Image 1 (tube, rainbow, N blue to C red):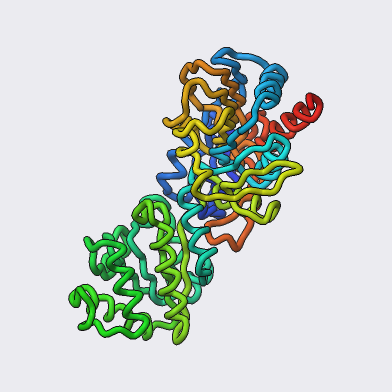
Image 2 (cartoon, rainbow, N blue to C red):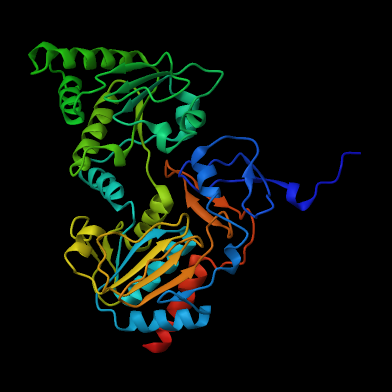
Length: 423
């Protein structure tokens, strides 16, 4: 008979919550220090995230002004801070569906503005979608159908190490073309690279003109235009082309214009061939929270929510860093449950802050009242649901361990109850 496994050797199948690919094939092995290790796959991003947890996480206590306290006292101080807030900002918002639903209700009660730590990428994608629409594809559709993958101005495997593993079918050949970037993929030694150092907007402008029937020789940069014209011919010859881009890697502050151009090219190509686009975004629950807020309110993030008042959505005015720099808020709620994220550098020391964060969060001393409550990480110490990168699947996640930390939804639920009783 095989030897009986000790608890430290126990294995479980697990979904990794630390990037929006939400890989569901992870085999975890418990460690002596309560972190857990993956025994069947190598993903540096997951390994780095798992290393932030320890056996001491469950003993991390809430704090008021850098002094340990109990949860009841911390919640009482939170209720007091929120009762005096006239223009609060809820940001970070790194949580799951249940946490987002609870935060929406608290925001409505408090009259808060909601934004995410990756709000710039979300807003750029949303603006392009609102203005021109888009044709999306999914991880499974790329894997099963795409014979040509066009990567635009980004290096997907840097931020999403298992991306190519998720979209390339070993039994079926798919060609990869990198446009305006390096061939950053170990298995793509035979991939083509065109216009590696060209300006992204120049590429997209010429590409747009070519798909609308302009002659390459008639354009301002014939050399670039001919390279793109050859790519267009390859797309026409392919059965299905997947366009891959990363909103956070596009030139700022006009990333929305670049995304709009990509969407327009994909839609134009679909007049005669089949193609779809996939935006690599949604880190730290960004896509999850944006989807949740949208279905609850009809508007995406960067919206002010208040009972009894019209919803006010403004993707430019309600940008976290700009609001902090302009000193337009009087209370700041920061959610970072997946990783120990620091407060924004643009936050003044004299603004009261409430932090619901990863248990390894380190806090600097501040002048204004500051409350910290350690919370469970979805998929590590609590169950929940997250949207996958392609927004087509809501993935259920289960905890890898149980450190006894409360979830964001549970803590915010207590905050809502306290706010109601004080009003």
